[in-house]
Every structure is written in C-alpha cells, then in structure tokens.
Image (cartoon, rainbow, N blue to C red; front, side, top):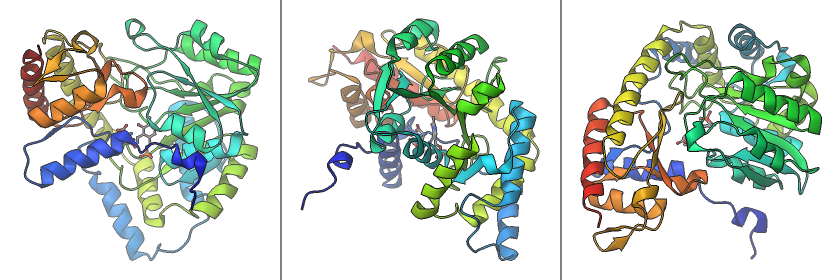
Length: 397
Ligand code: PMP
Ligand code: GLU
C-alpha cells in the first residue's frame, strides 16, 4: 500500500543518526572519537535530579494540563522577564516535549500549503524538514563565513516574497556558532513587520556565549515585534537535560492556543516528572551553567587553534553554542585511500572508517564545503581527534 507521499520525502535526522552510530561503535569496544554529539557531555546537575526524585515521591505521576503545569509556565514567564526582558503571561506559554517539539507545533500551527519559510544557511538539520511536514516551502538565504555567518540583510530582502510566512532565526547558532547583533535583529524585525511575517526565534543556546558575546531576544525589541515572534527555548542545552525532553514556546496567545490544541491530540502533556525537574532548574542557581560555559570556552579555543594549525582546513571562531564549522573546501576532490572526497559526506565517511572520528557532514546543514565538530567532549578527546584529523588530511593526495 502506498505510504504518505509527503512524509516519504522526509529525511532522517543526520545529527541523531551519526551520534547514534558513534555511540554504537564505541559500545562495541571501538576506539571512537565522537565530534557529532549535539549535547552537553556534563551530567544533569544534582539539584535537578533531586527535584525529579521528590516529584516521584510526591506522586506527581499523572497527566498534567496538556500545556504544562501552571507553576512551570509561571517560572518560564519569570525567566523570560528576568533574562530576556520580555513580558509574557502563563497563557502565552506552551511547554512541549523538547524545543524540537515546540518548533514542530509552531509550523503546524502557522503554515498553509505553499507558505514560504526563510531559513538562513547553514541551518539546523531539522528546520527544513519540519517546514515541509507542515506543507510549507523552505527558502534558503546565504550567509558568509567572512561575516561570521551573520544575517546579511540584503540577501534576506531578496528572499522575501508575498508568500513569506515566517523566518527562522537561531542565535546563538547551530551549526555556525554565530551570535546575531542588535543591528541584525533590528533589521530582521523591521522587515518582518513591513512584510507581515512571523519570526520564529530558536534561543536554545542562549546560555552558551563566549568572549563577552551578548544574547538578545528579538521579542524584547518592542511590543509589535513581540507580537509576531514565537520564542523557543528549552532545558536541553543550558541544564544538560537532553534526555528529559522539555522545551517551550512563548508567543501571542492566539497562536499558542492553536499549538496547544494540536499538542493535546498528538502527545498530551510533556512528562510530569521532567516538568517538576525543569521548575527546579529554572529557579535554581546559575553558577553551574557558568562552570559548564567556562569549560566549553577553553575547549573551543583549543579546537579553533588546532584546526587552524592544520594545512588545508580552517575555521572561524564561534561566539556561541558548542560547534565549530570546519572548512574543507580546499581539500575536496582530493583522494584518500583511492577514494575521491567529492563532498562533506565522503569526507565524514572516510574519516570515520579510517580514523574512527565522527563528524557531521555540512550537507546536513546545507553547507557541503564544511563538516561540523562539536566540542561538547573532553579536552583529551579533542586533542586526540584533531591529531587523527591532521594525519587524515596529510594522507590526502
Ligand atoms: N534547536 C536547535 C538549534 C538545536 O540544536 C536543538 C538540539 N537538538 C533543538 C532546537 C532541540 O532541542 P531539544 O528538542 O532537545 O530541546
Ligand atoms: N541539536 C543537536 C545537534 O544538532 C542534537 C541532535 C538533534 O536533535 O538534531 O546535533
């Protein structure tokens, strides 16, 4: 029997696939260095684990309101006002099963067939697929490595049509590490107001900033911008809670209501225990995040310097998140062990096979001249992995 034509065209998440493959090879005893992981390598802080245990002991094991417990939605409002200078009421918050689910709900709620969604390149792997799952059309906008992959407003203007329904912005960015400036955000907001489209602002990496980079929520620019923005954030990256699956959206209650209705039929409430743990996370001390960021920072510096010391590959210095986009353009079409490296997939495959090093091919992010390395792994791994990359590059003919 024929399956859904639309969904047969949806590709599997390459980031998750590569991460799973590297973990599987490691568990089979292979000496794998994994740069694929898009998750902090730290344990969830103990005060959050304690809150989850307490929730179990108190018997918070039943259905909650589908949109999330009121205490958590209130705490999210408090966090958004405190950290992001933007004011929301609990009925403007929807808690979902991870920020990925929040984004999925957004596109289901706002798109009609043929609506266009602007996505800056390089993009996080799931954006175009989510847009397509909601019958939308992804429209890509180029950014330049020389401009640190920041939003180029002229390119953005060219991409806007009468069918533009939304733009996705992700700052700090996965995979480029770019952090948008106030000027760039104001430019995007002005175009969105002028041409009447939504801003989907994925702020999941907001805590992971380096060298004094500042995070600015586009919704905080002014009330009109707030009204067309859907702000997405979650617990995964800031609190090392990837497995707990809690994310949220803040936005105009008319849109939040549609998203909540969809969620109520698709998944009901997010996990009750994880919601109580998230409550503790948001209301807890922030020094644990600071420690994590300072470790990421020192790994970042090391990784950037080491890559740039190897002939043939290079990278710019990311300002946020925990990824480096390694430029492999100069070595493409050369040969390794008799195999031509025609693109980032070939590079990643050959590297994994010959040196046991897992990286994510840039093609997953619409940037075939790059591979993405995550520095959410120990300094020793980074050192060893880059030694292996250097010997791989030296073997190219
Ligand atoms: N947005 C971006 C840019 C991400 O990298 C991730 C990581 N998986 C997510 C959203 C989703 O995070 P989660 O579903 O774990 O909250
Ligand atoms: N966001 C992470 C990454 O880009 C985790 C994997 C995923 O959800 O795609 O690697």
